[in-house]
Every structure is written in structure tokens, then in C-alpha cells.
Length: 124
Image (cartoon, rainbow, N blue to C red; front, side, top):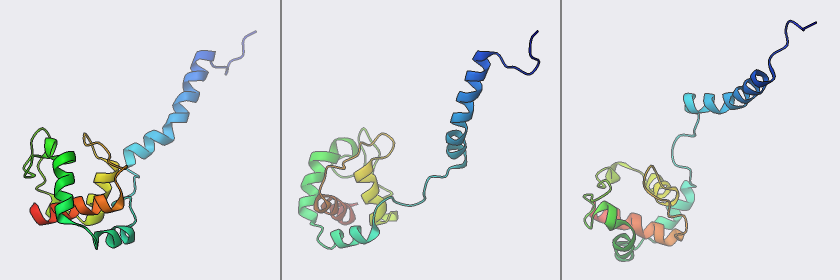
């Protein structure tokens, strides 16, 4: 005699998988990612105090200009027109962690990131 409320084994597995992914799907749809930059703003402010525009320009030319253009107007990647509207912490977060098609440059020292931002502030 067959039990009435017993699910087919394959359906049981699929249901378990769906229930496991439900919390992840909910987070993605609701947009529960933290707002703002994921960096320590005090650390950014301290590092920015020693940002060197000239050193930042050299880094920009070697790391960024191929995509953003030598003058920041864009090349294969977007221009830097939004830089003036962004905080130092937001720029720091993008440089260190990347965004969309831009790779992360998390290997840069705090000084190098501060130098890049100092160059952008002076030239964009």
C-alpha cells in the first residue's frame, strides 16, 4: 500500500535545493547589501592627508589610463566624470574592490590609493 503524502525522491531533492537558495534569492532581490563604501572612512581620511598628485599621476598612467584614457575622458572603459561627485571613501572602495568590469586593485598600498585619488581630485 502506497503512502498518500509521500513525495517522489527527486521532488524532495529539488524542494530541498530550492529552500536552500531561498534566503540567497531574497537577499539579492531585496538588495540587502550595505549602503556606502565598504572601507574605514577614518583610515581613508588619514591616508588622504598624504596623497601625492605627481605619484598618483604616474600610477594612473600605468594602471588606469588604458581603460579610462590618459585624461580621464574614457577609452575602452568609462570616463571619470562622476569622480567630483564621489567621496574619497567611495573612490577608495572602487579602486580597492573593483566594480562591474573594473578589476580590483586591492594589492595597492594605502599610500598608492591615496595618491591615485589625489591625482583624480586635481585632474578630473
